[in-house]
Length: 377
View 1: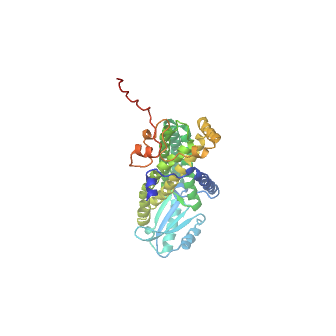
View 2 (view 1 turned 90 degrees about the vertical axis):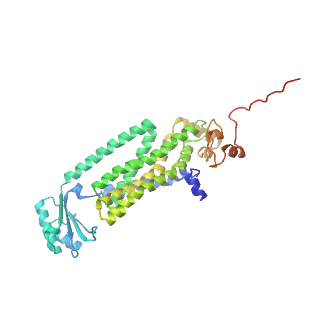
């Protein structure tokens, strides 16, 4: 319980820089695998993007092979998708999707499927979609993505700095590639709801990153004046302070998403909720992960190349004290002020002066008042 309390109060000291190298290498492998899968296998686009027809046949007898045989009679078996699903009323439905944009041909296939299943043609639900609507959705989504990236980059560069904007966008690109790569590797169907989820993921990913950056900005202003710590050391302390906030925010965000997936998709049989919640589920995990292990090390790498932090690291190397320069301990005193003035007591709830004096770290911020001399007789 003591370790958990320290974790929640930001008094933990996890060595994040030591974890960065193996985890970043793992992320690079995931990104490369995602790109290779996108190039080789592509993504499994739904009928809304490719166009075609969908027939839903409520039947207890017709199998996948039987539906495929019907499509073969119309020369539509190649590239067709046949699934057996269950609706909210536990009714068995054979869902058939094929490349057929002609309405008359679609009606003939529906009649053949109804005959094969032994039901009336009115019981077969038919939906024919052209590819133009899906292309329009894709175009609008790409436009929204470009506008979003430009506005976010400009805002972060204006409010914080351009290095933080670059690192944040690299984290966003990582999240999108990983999410789309998982869809490509698993050949999960990409629907318009999935595209909307991809755009929603961007906001979640940036939120966690901005939380880290805000604490970094605060700690840099407090501890950077003395030139004692490298940016990696400030980053390490900041991540330890916000790690539980990121975890808690992600867990709270996952609860409604899991509710949509379990209740809406599984119990109520709504495929739109399933597509939307699945992409969000992957994106939320990836967003919390990238804010700690992608955007943060990229920003640290960029900041360490500034002249100021180069000089700090060079001085630490001359002293042989790089390890201490990369490590800001819990309750580190603010540069230029006493430990009491900084308010960073290492023990929460205790008297700051008493703790600092006991540790031998209390320093007066002003010279002692001279004693009053007695009058000479």
